[in-house]
Length: 244
Ligand SMILES: C[S@@+](CC[C@H](N)C(=O)[O-])C[C@H]1O[C@@H](n2cnc3c(N)ncnc32)[C@H](O)[C@@H]1O
Image 1 (cartoon, rainbow, N blue to C red):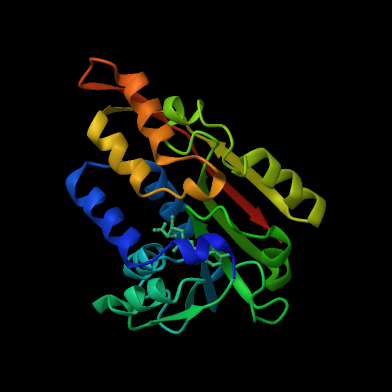
Image 2 (cartoon, protein in one colour):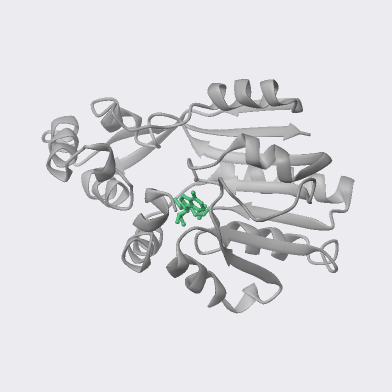
């Protein structure tokens, strides 16, 4: 099992939930992703959809909520390497029609050419080789992640050690593998954030395993804010769409 899988659990999930409850999160990019998924569902009438690194299952539950009729007899699966996250995902009332399984994104137990659509959001630990293997020919991969700024570009630039996929690198991998109709949409979104909000964001993030101490994070945030109570922080998400 990967390290990041072990890192996620109840404590971090609670931090994430309280952050999203406390602070507004103008997430138009996730809405754009959901619109793309909806379009692919309408076009392909999928029998099976997989959500990688599903966490609390938000994305796949939202996909189901928006496409209830079209997905009536489809198989919906969310996998996560953290057993705690699988338990949390299963506890949502609207999760009944979804199967949540503890499994590593990089070594799944699914047979070749199995899924019509594979989706993943905010999961850097994915293998495009594995996605390609378990996707049906003609199936779609739709992926959303943050760039090296991790959604807090100004703070993260002073802590470059984190290993993050850049959208371009994933696209190169996908081309090599044989994916077609690849599209990369990059965003650079200014948000007004207070020091406490940025602290809360970094609190939910997996930075310590990359050799960055919490002290260093706090210093970088203080350095950026100085005497200001709020500042503009850029978010750098990207969306990748590709077809096998
Ligand atoms: C930042 S959360 C995102 C959760 C969800 N996709 C969302 O957007 O709300 C990352 C999730 O990926 C899971 N994860 C990390 N590495 C993984 C791996 N190798 N295989 C499966 N899940 C993994 C973590 O346990 C965690 O739940």
